[in-house]
Image (cartoon, rainbow, N blue to C red):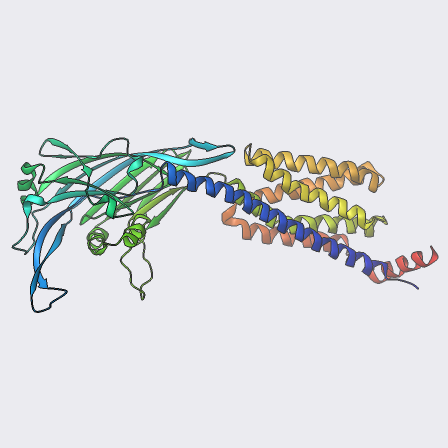
Length: 461
């Protein structure tokens, strides 16, 4: 009984393609597992060392009492302690980041951390508060900081040529999300008059954190200039920088706004619960109800690994189907055009070599630069397959031609990985070129005759 050899070969190749896709799924899960180890390492640092940092620019709060109906007897009046919040009239911030991946390491895993030196100048205007029971003697200048473990020293503020250190508030243990640094008029009575009448200030802060920094402005007018020794920065938050520059492992950015600060202080004043403060420390407005969606608060700069080996490897695996498809298609074209007979087992061995490429890429890139790991893995696999194809194709010329095809294929995939913004465009163009090449090479092939010849040869055998 005659069999359709061409159809059987296509079916066998399709089956091998399916098995290869299952192997890629396993490799993708392996990448996710290794990436999970890195995330656990980062969580350990955040719990035991220091975490991402958020700070709220200084504001004033003044206690006062108000008579309200008692909770247990509405006919009686009870005294309730309230706080009046005063924002700065204007502030101008400058920060200088020193970013490194060498401070926190465990085995092959590293964490991005930064040292941020901040300076702020600003002015508080005379408060306009219509509350007769304000207790000016207990007024406080408040400077909330998400994780005080990152402080190298206590933040300072200079008022009327005198420098003061912020101290930890007594209510820190009752709240989560921020360590409230305060400067109290009760301990420094000379501050009562400046707080009542307005004052200019100069504040300094030196703080360490992991990967991301959030600044939540509270002043009416707000300016912020930042710079540092990193290149890949993700800006987010309520507003994006007016100007930004990133090149040669340096970055600069500048913000200027007259609207967000006052609204932020209103949200902070309403935010009293621990869960609300936790959200606030993550750069999300914590004062929400069930009908509101979380909104961003403050401005953030997140430092991104210049080459994330796990995301790059996972992206490369996504091109695995294209790699094996082109490899098998090239094999099949050699069979058609050169009259070769390549066994499905030989297809399988080549597919395994392609799978080993991704395994080598992942393992080597954990110790060396991704570009070097990619070059080493691609070179090893191309040399292995070239040596093997020399015996399959019975000639050096055909093996070298296939080697050039594989090298160009790996080179194109690397370019796709590096050009994340134009991946779709380059992928589309590459697909078109490959299809055009196949159509050109097979333009004279009579597929019906080829199938009949193969069936005849098999029947004679």
